[in-house]
Image (tube, rainbow, N blue to C red; front, side):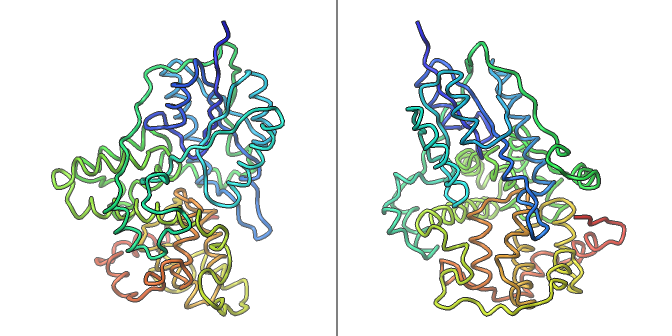
Length: 433
């Protein structure tokens, strides 16, 4: 008797806990083929000299894929890792393993959704279905009190309505066993060198204090719930609200897992203010994803949601380069850019300061800054990155949240004691990009 097989295409959902596509596939089929695809389009250098995926984020992704493989092996399965264009390799694998369907989590930004469309079209030619799931947001799209086209653009209104009129779903079950085809091929995870990164960049990435993967994400969450993750907050100046963002961005931690854990420990080992900060961050993340779903590519336009585009002046490339290298002369901006270039992460407050400086002081397009963050940030995701940059530049979707009003307050919030600027402007640090 033939067994049904479903191919599970992992993208930004690198976990086995609270993973809807894995859980659904196991409930609908006897076996699954877990696959991760390294798409070469995501590891190219651009004409600007920047990367689509910088070396530190690439390292974090490699670690997260390896951790997913270990988790699946612990459940009796494995992860098939391949390199190539998903629209080419996935139909080939689906045919090879005679799968019934292909499951994946839907994305919202134009490049990611375009790749899904290419895969869907290629599978359809083989009479196979690409089934989309919505597993990246705290609030499920089907539970919203309004259709996507009617979602309030004002964040405060959006938050008030969803918190009052709908609920957050519980996490799905974690599998105890995963069966894969007996002839599932063995595969190797690529290296940073195979992506074309130089030895100097690989050595820079090796110094990163962030370890990718579900196991590390859960450890960080547990440390936070136990009273704070001092190893990150003290060393790198991260606010509690963004401390988990690298693992959330790649789906090593699901937003439901974080939310339900935070609510459980709220006002116990986790102070209420910290819990509120984390949940607000999750709501902003939802907001930007739904705004991308509603407005499409508008966040990638210079004028964004304003009636007139910002009047960015033509400036010398040297000004942008000094901003990137942390050589502006502004101690807060320079410290933050040194930190970003060194470890691939900066606190949310620092992101506001450096973005405001680029757009307001240097009068350089926020889209250039967002592209640089795409290269450097290990917690990069298109919606939050381009959405936040648009707001700081004054062209975001939530009009009341456009612009930056109190720079001095933000500087004090980031570095009231002067330790942050002192640490990251130290002449002993190397900032190779």
